Image (cartoon, rainbow, N blue to C red; front, top):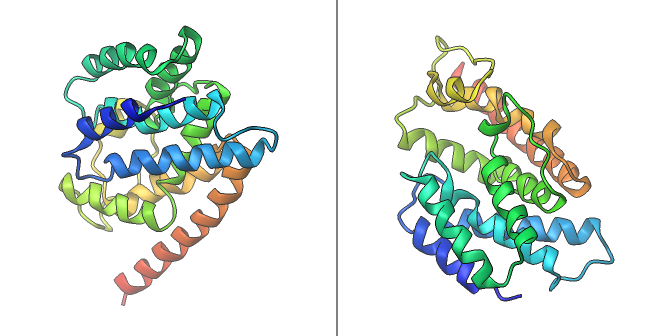
Amino acid sequence: MEIKQVIDFTQTHLKNEKTGHDFYHGERVANLASQMYLVDHADAHEDSRVVAIIKTAGYLHDTIDEKICADPQKVIDEIEELLPQVGFNELEAWDILFTIQHMSFSANIEHHYHLPLSGQYVQDADRLESLGAIGIARAFTYGGKHGNKIYDPEIKPAVLTSHDQYRNHVETTINHFYEKLFHLEDLMNTPDAKKEAERRTAYMRDFVREFMQEWNV
């Protein structure tokens, strides 16, 4: 299945994004999610419809993100029109739309949504993008863009209890590691993602450990 229209749609909607949720992030999520699916399902084919669903949700997921999209419902309506044009049937389109609307970390703080298998790979790939070297770079880019301090020992990490609290509490970028990023390893759905999350989290813990040693000279 040809998903060039999906790629073009994503490029158009994320062309001005500068907080780590840009087109290249979507592209990495799409590629990583499909690669992990193929590793875990040796009998699957790269040109299968499942892989097309995974890649499409990977590309599109941040086009409706409330952090960067002024009118998510408007973009959802556009995606509903786009998916049949690409060739997805009603059930496939539902899987994609359900995934991108329910996969985010913030959407799952109070209620854990059970995603379709394709969506679990997209969710895992998106979470892996918050870990490792790229995860560190994205965390500081986002924090700087939103005026967060790098670190302040007077501001303690919060226990996240709701979507609204997560969005509105005072945080620092280093606290973000303790509040969210170090927890993602335990939230992975799929076998290959769990292994990769362990590796990336270890790298990230080493970084934060080094940061704190330098801070406390």
